[in-house]
Each structure stands twice: as C-alpha cells, then as structure tokens.
Length: 477
Image 1: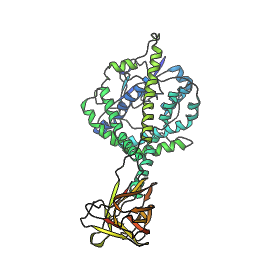
Image 2 (image 1 turned 30 degrees about the vertical axis):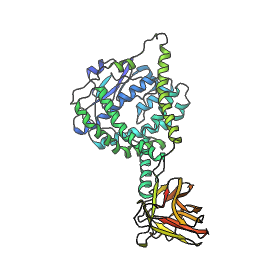
Image 3 (image 1 turned 180 degrees about the horizontal axis):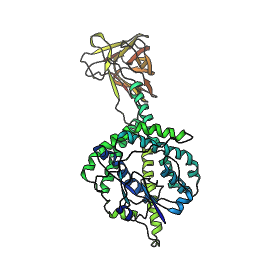
Image 4 (image 1 turned 180 degrees about the vertical axis):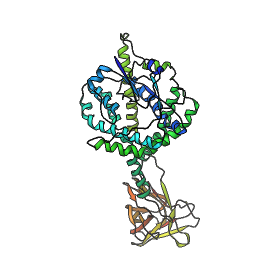
C-alpha cells in the first residue's frame, strides 16, 4: 500500500490521483493569478525538471519535495512524522540513513498555488533555509559515515548542505570584493583576476539558462518566458533573507517557529502537462528487472563517464590555468622635460630633446607622473630601463636606479618599489633590468623614476631622452 501526500499548497484533482507515479515523487506545477505569481511560479518547475531528472540518471541523492510525493504507508508508520521546519528534507535523510532510495519522475504532476507576495515568499524561504541547514548540521556525520550510501550520494548530500548557505557565502564574497575594489583599491594580479570575472559571468548566466531549460522541457506557453529575468532579480532579492536564516539554522540548538504561508485555494490557469519526450522516457523510465547481457555494465559505465568527464575537464583546466604563462601588457613610462619640469608618461616624445649630465658622483634626477594612481597591486615581474647616452669612447657610469612612488607630485620622498644598481654604457638603445615580487601601491600615489650617480669612468655620460630617436623609458610589469 502506498500513501500519496499533498501539502496545503496543492489543489489535488482527480487527474492527479489517477496519474501513475512509479517514482513516489512528483513535480509541482505552479499556476498563477497575478503577474507577480508568474515570476514566483518559475522556480519549482524550471529547477525540478532539469536538476532532478539529471540526478535520477546519475543515481545520486534526491531530496523529497514536500509538494507531493508517494511513500509506502507501512514505512511512514515505522518512521513516524517529523516535526522539523522542513520535514520533507528530514524524511529524505532518515530514509537514506536506513538504506532506502528516493526516485523521481516528472510525469507525476499536481497543480500548486504560488506565493502571492514577496513578503510571504521571503518568510517561506527563510523557513526552508533554516530547517534545511538545521538538518544538515544534525545529520551530517550520520550520513557521511553511513555504509548504506554510495560515494556519489554522499557528495550530493554535501552539495545539498551548501545549498542555502550559498547566500551567506555570496554576501560575504561580494562584501570582500566591494571592500577590495572601493575601499582598499587592491586587485589580485594575473590569472586569478580573470578567474574571478569568469565565475561572476558564469553565475549570472547559470540561473537564466536553467530556467529556460526547464521551460523548454515543459513546453511552457510563451508568456512564461517573460518571467525569466524577473526570477533572476527575485533570486538576488531573497539572498539576505536566506543567508540569515541558513546561518541561524546551522548553529541553533532548536529550530524556530513555523510560519504557515497563506493560500487562497484558487487556481486560475489551465493545467499544462509535461509533454512526452523520447530522451526523458529513455532515461527516466524504470529499467527491466532482467537486464540484457552487459546492460548493467553499460549503465554503470555511463554513470561513471558522466561523473568523471566533468571532473577531468575541470582538473585539466585548473592545472592549465595555474601553470600557464601570464601575458600582461607592460606599462612603459617615457622620460620628459617640458619647460624644465621632469615628468614621465606613456607618450614616446614631446619633440624637445633633453639630457641629464652624469659626470659627477652624487648627481640625482627624479621624474614623476603627472597624475596620481588608485590603489592597486603592481604584479611581480621585470622592470626594464632602456636608455640612450653620449660620452667619450668607453665611458661608463655606475648608477642607482629606483622605481617607486610618492605622496607628492614632486616625488620629494620616494618609496622604492624596484631598486638596483647598474653600469650604464655609452651608446643607444641599451637596457638594464631587474625582477622583483609584487608590491602594493597605495591610493593617490605618484610614480617616480630616480637615477643617482654612484661612480663615473672616463668623464661620465649624458643621458639623452625625449627625442624621436632617443626614447629613454622605464617599463614595469
């Protein structure tokens, strides 16, 4: 004997009672009475069909949906009815802990009434998040230690454990990103910055694509597609409510009170049934009790491939991203002397040749940028000084070269970022370089390039710059 269970959210009809339900679990169909409900009604159908159907194919843990499901009456009497805020999730964990399995079919359907207002929806989702996290904490070790669950089912349980906690992690990560960008003005250099933007855009597109996939599988009418973007906006509005409730449920000793979501009992839309699709039928219909020769092996191999292939691809991409050489556009600063002001910027020349006499030890000259820079991280890499000089024959100059920053536009006090000593030779297009680690550049800082003569040989040299054929410059990582 099986017992069919509907919640108050459902309006069971004779057709739903007659629908065969070999899987004991059904997909809720939300009918609407307002524009707001059209948006609110997307979540159950568009998430259940793609996600749970794929879980059924893989054989991973599937959570009972309290919307409507079937369970053997004797088993329900044995287990008893739970008192958790999310009794369906608690029942799922109790069943798996005892070695039972939950199966799913999208063809057992029942119409449901969606929440009418955002306030009621927020209260409902807070109850779900609190009860869900509470049961994750309560059953965590029991499920992971149980020999009755497969490794895949345990992995799915860990995913379920973070389901509502994602909201808290999302808020924490967004706050950290906001502080680093706006307050500290610090960015992580190299490939990690690219990875961060990749995660951002992939997360933004994931929910709309999943909603569209569910609508396509259900064969929903065109008007339902208008709520896709609204559902995305709604999911972000629910983040702070779910974050607080999930963290509260994770650490509290006893669950909070139960808030019943008010319902009207009115279903105004015509109930649409999921169309029969060969691909879904082939994957989700029960297998014959007597498998064909090699059938079990093929099924197991298919599951292993579905699991191993994404893991292998992600592993290869991760290793490649971590070891791939990072190509960055170098910042080149050319030295200038317009009207006796020693500056540097990205312009190759101002058309007026200038020189710095390096004939006496102790002679020092500093060039500064004309604009202050925002706080950022100067990545690790090579600093290269390319220069033109003139002098007698084999004359050389030993100079201390410093690239740094200052709080003032005159670079009166230079804080070194990169500093090294080099022997400058006579000629054109020569260069010297040094490799240094990443450095944090404070906000509102001016960049400075300073040359100090340490020793001269054979009369010293004149540093030539700011000419079309003498573009002396310093290149940074």
